[in-house]
Image (cartoon, rainbow, N blue to C red; front, side, top):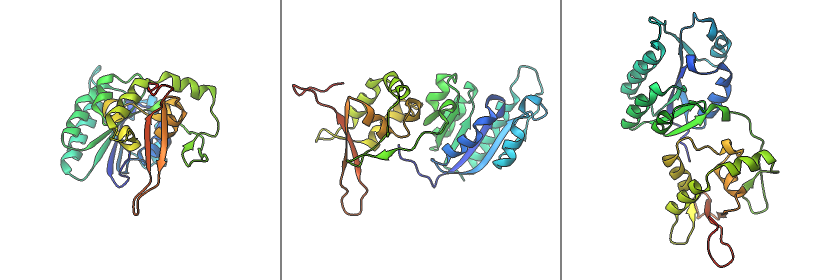
Length: 259
């Protein structure tokens, strides 16, 4: 799940369908994927329901785009976002889009952007319809945009949480081990180990809404280290290369694997 932080990104926010309280954490998350060259929030700003956005827009240099609700029952905000997104797409100046909404109306837009070879990062609540989630390269639930405690390296150089809480354990038990197992199996080399980066890429390809923070961990390596089903090993780098993190299914007595 490596990202090119030099990517030029567009952030388009459906303010009618997103909470202003997520803005700071949202922008911090987007910074992991690249630099936001365009930041726009769409809505009918004459609506008192969007009053909470005023300070947020100014503080974070987000451009408000006014879109009046011309007809009751028709979502003019969605239409304006889609039109602007297509204009920005055809400009050829950007590498990816961040679409902030829990609305399935953006499913086709996400698909169209990806068809042009650009990345799409979706942000929305857990109620977001699955078709929109699946249409994105990666989907981040806004409920997960929160501070996680710092992690410290253990004796063998693999970063793990300093302490595990019951909440973390419960979150880990909730995930599907079959998802991790399938991704590890797919990425195995002849030595029986898989590069963690390849495992992460496979996970996101199959499950765009996969995010370690959902389960209480800041990184995939932390989550796998906490699992009783996998071994994680840090291999010394070759000259001029970065260290490799490798993962495999943990062996049990008799030589079979646990998962």
